[in-house]
Image (cartoon, rainbow, N blue to C red; front, side, top):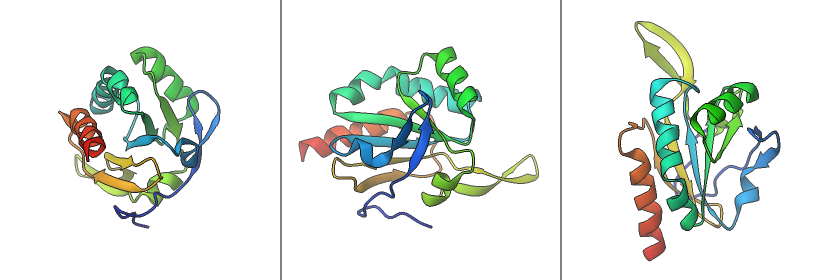
Length: 157
């Protein structure tokens, strides 16, 4: 299933790193930065999470919530958050249903091996719940700043 910019973002319900159940629709009235990443504790994912952490207050000032999604367990998310002092929720998508909903569960290749996994992607959802921007096959370097700039510029319109 594909999601299209300009349409209502598919709602979902997942367990969050604080142990609570979170629905995307809970955040109506705020911008949502929904980012999908492959795996806690790996170099690229750690860099990306720490970049979001370092810009957390800037996103908060723009009334934006950051939600990270990966197939990792609740226990692994908790360790990742604790180790890197992440101030935002990570969502557990062990069965990758939400990743499939957003069309980021893909066939990947690494060192000649094929496997299914998350294609690093970020979606910006506006205060009404509409998908307004997407980045697929994200390169970590400067990506968080790009997402922050997009929300800032959207507010100026």
